[in-house]
Length: 318
Image (cartoon, rainbow, N blue to C red; front, side, top):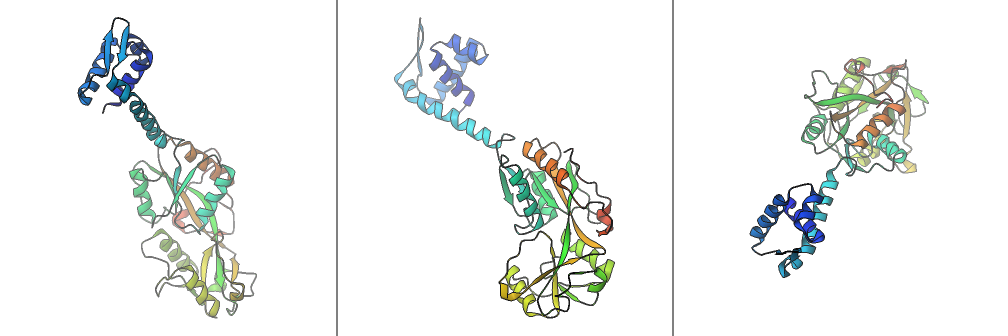
């Protein structure tokens, strides 16, 4: 059913004259007559009785009028749901416990007027494809991996750097250290069963291990966060890396320790990825917020892989 014809019918019913409906709609009286005639043909009924004083609704026209108004209201709601600024900004955060989710939470508290729809996709490839397809507006990813080129029209800018910490149980040799250096981790077993070959986080930890001669083990099945914490709490040999803003909760009796890594401090280079020309005002607000709140970027004493060093940073200019 042609919504223009429905809108013309409702306007004619409300004004009572095709001439007045034409003036309100900005079309010719002939166009109004043609639209109404087309609608009557689709419905198989007459909607108006033409008189010298104007157009009077028939019984069928009176029956159809409230439904026609409902159709127009439904169409307006449908368009509003995808109109920039009216629908939620859809952002991929990799994992809901990880740093990007925490940083997005900061943005939400600072900008409660921006409605968010938070999703989690597997890796950078899936995120970029979703951005290209228009199913998400943006993603937090490390996208400057060796050999990776973003498709035309996809933009990425380094948004924030997240320090990496060591997580160990109370029996670990480094459990009581206030901080450790990467050199002091040489020879210790860093267990990270969640690393998947070919992902951006695998590229980061491969570079970290190669740079400092670390032993990062990915053997064994990944049963999730809680089993990992149980294993670490009971081990004197295993530790793992976590982002500074990764949300972890464990029973007091486990005695797990989060230990800062310094001199240099490894940081994970999170970038914001989006499609150029996306008009959603929430995206502009997110970029501006990330630029204004960026800390640590470019400071001495930080380490990132060489493939991340050349990435441009967001500025507060949005």
